[in-house]
Image (cartoon, rainbow, N blue to C red):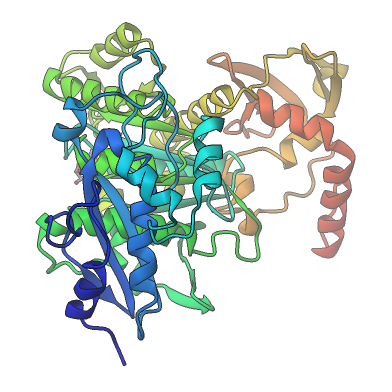
Length: 527
Ligand code: ADP
């Protein structure tokens, strides 16, 4: 028996509003209620400044609905009512919110203690908030002043790709960035949260819907080696845009956590979230509901887009998500027939803006027919033309983004001193931490983090044989975070970040042993 919306509303009438005056239904705080596959999704609008104290309210609403017969689960989020939130005082201290609360941290005012409404305190003391949280838990949470955002199972890092407005190439950049991250040897997934036009399945040439793997865990779709989920799998295209927003906010967190990202291939190093364009409440709430390691802002060179990009940066800063940097898309026109570059929108706008704002500038992507055609036909340029200039640009973008992720989490590997010795047969890398590694040219060649060696995904990694006598021809530094190594057999597309080189050094013996085993198993030789 499936549950009816009227039953859900009746249950929710038992949940009191923020000031315990009326109930959340009659106060008009609920979004539209969506029931799909016996799961109930909705959001509750609350003043932004009170999000922290009202987590109990969210839990209570989730519980009364989950307890209804015929309900398999409920997903409830708080969405910020920005206008109310901005007027109220006192401000909560600037801390990261929990997984399910929409609480914009206020501008860096002096931290003040979280003051709970007296009636909420009294109700909690009596256990009347409906969630079983007594005074002790509440007190300890407030006292610690630290709020933890639950991680996503099977995912090490989540990065958002956002833009101040639509049409700047955010989705195109997101998918090629994801594929670029994969080409530098990482395990990558992408989730499309762009409700206004979910495009990742189309960009990756995926059709169909994901399947439930076991229990309620969803098996993600796959495209070009990426694990893929999209709000488009969940939200009907016929659903009116006005209430797709709250639905996405409530369903996204759930989709993130109930997807089997790791599968049989292990945890993803990074999951890219293609955000809805713009910087309104929906984007703000997503940024607060998803444990982001950082955000990449895509902009075009025109001023207007940059103004919007600035708003995007301000939004992420408010919720303390590190800005990994700005990418300038459609930066210059690259003539498809003669390859001439024309700076039709002027040049350097985004780089200047990044400098002014004190955020990294991650690079420029040209406006080019091949990027449009490959994107729109589900064959992204980074995988279908790995040797093209564009693929190289996206791999560099990816390496730069990954470097910023490491910098943000404080694990960035500083540059080593590199020496090519033995007539090109060995690379010596002396790192500032005192560790020095020597790599044979053969090892670097066969473990090159490039599309040629990595294939489209870690599982498709190509085993390269017959490289015993290969030599290093040259080293070309890329920014201050990587080097490109050219070999005398013509291979030169691998971008070795300092982090990857250090990792190769630390795991040299295991990796070399695994390579020899792989060669043997495939009947290949080193000679
Ligand atoms: P957004 O996600 O910002 O709305 P899209 O990624 O959907 O933007 O891009 C909008 C259109 O512009 C698409 O047709 C896409 O193929 C095209 N496009 C994006 N970036 C480029 C580029 N660098 N060169 C050529 N076409 C591009």
